[in-house]
Length: 184
Image 1 (cartoon, helix red, strand yellow):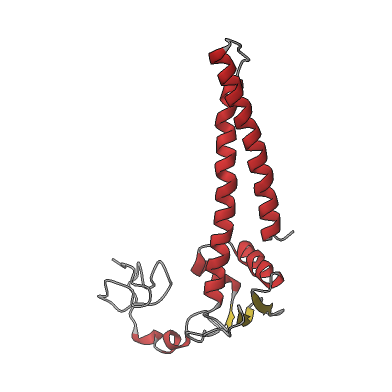
Image 2 (cartoon, rainbow, N blue to C red):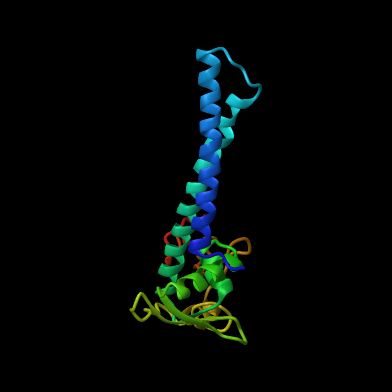
């Protein structure tokens, strides 16, 4: 089952609700222990897992929404892109990228379809705007301009491609000309 924003919110609600109940239980137990001297073994410690559950619930929601915006931003740059390239670019699992795209489609934020043969994503529009294809991509997954001049670059044996964005660099370059990352 694909992860949608609604399912994430439902999970967060339950996680935070149970965490809050544990936190309150632990707090009441601690107060009763300090004020009245009643001691129920282990219950003041329920504050700890309760607090952790509350924090992790909100962290899950923030992470999911952040990833949605990242995928949405990346899709603005492509008319056609492979899931593999998109997941590599975003540092996300392919399944998570697909889930986010399906969720964005069902929410009306993006109009896109998957190529049944290759699995590539065809982006028609993002939030009502057509994609701005920055660079056409060749069948190898490299931008066409890099594919055409690939033979002029002499890649270092240990690092011929930027470890962050995958763009090729010339010998002697210290920074990637695509993303600005240090390549030394």
